[in-house]
Image (cartoon, rainbow, N blue to C red):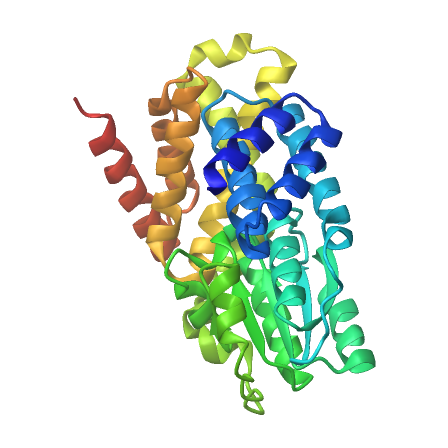
Length: 343
């Protein structure tokens, strides 16, 4: 039954008609579809499709933002279409990691928790850890629900998890950044992880235990003692410039790039360096190789040969010849990408 309303909302969102979008949601509720299905299968389903359309190069960034804004406005009025729920199951603070602008997953979770009977403080996108901790001291919630969609936010997530736990508040983590199986949530010491909003609400039906005292971030990631993550992240600008210069020597056509093309190339290399750094942080080469595979698909959808990534990896490897973990990660990514491109 939700399929009909999903399609109607999709048509309204792609047409840029927020009034029609609001009417679809009200109609779905009036037809007896339960609140969570409207939230997660209709609104959330449309939002997921928006991301898929951007990845396939069928939506521009502007179209993606416009569609997200309509969904956000629909959610803003969602609560007024239903009786106000009675809070009786504890207090939850829902926030996105500092630097994380993809707030829709957290927003959907906040609405689900409200209708499950929780008192919810929804703090939105990009919440710096010190401000979040100040909020915890002021309000005393039972748990923090921390959302991150981009894996590059994992170091910030780690710092936030540790800070919340130091304030005696357990953390449940969620979002694509933590891995499809929650491996990075566990690695970074989160007290719980959930793959989606329904699972998170189910987990929070029972109180999470208070965090253990005296926990330090290095306890989770002893490999950081080799300083590779720190050195790569601190020299990222220099690495990007060096790789760009090397690419101009290896790919002469780049010398004829327009300023816009050069900017895009530099941004792509910066993302590669950023994902290499976070892979070093969590000590998992699969994070980097997965990102490269995704990037290759994105480039193919935009008619850019994904093989152009290979010389960038080789040049970056040359810059990091004294970093054994970096070398191993880059080698694994190069092999996987080469195998993918081989007919």
